[in-house]
Length: 224
Image 1 (cartoon, rainbow, N blue to C red):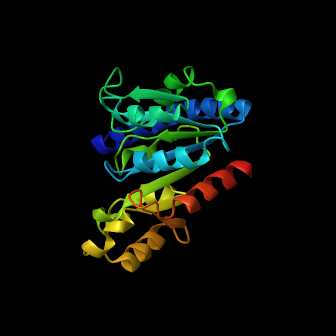
Image 2 (cartoon, rainbow, N blue to C red):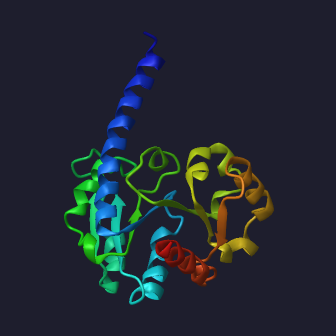
């Protein structure tokens, strides 16, 4: 058998096993009544900063929990700790070999530490990577991608899977637009080329632009 064919069979087997565990996660979330968001981006796009705004504006209205995925450290979880929301850290470098994404089994490993029945919305902050996180279902209801305009207009065409799989794209760091050679209209055309009509919100974690709209989207979807 050709080596490429072998690799394809192995990958399909891995994804099939992952899908079975994702379905088990899904059943646990449904049983607890959780609305689950898989938040994905490249490193440094601003996921944690947007989560800080989100927790600040929605706690008391919606019970939010966070499952933090990183290769190493608890730095992001530590930033969110001041909101006293249920947070659990999953490091893919400790026992998972430094993986660049969360898969269903990794998410499952953190669920026992979360009070799922006391959570309305669970946000899974995935490891920063533009490719691998989109390949693995984790039992989520929706996928939200955070995209920083510092990454250029062409990434939807170069890394289409994540953009294609997103239910919502938060176009972040809009406060930097006057300082960059970034063509917003061209980026949105590229985004529509791989995921026509996907919802998008222009945001800035630095100024708070678009955060209310994002929080309304999140709480509105939770109530659907």
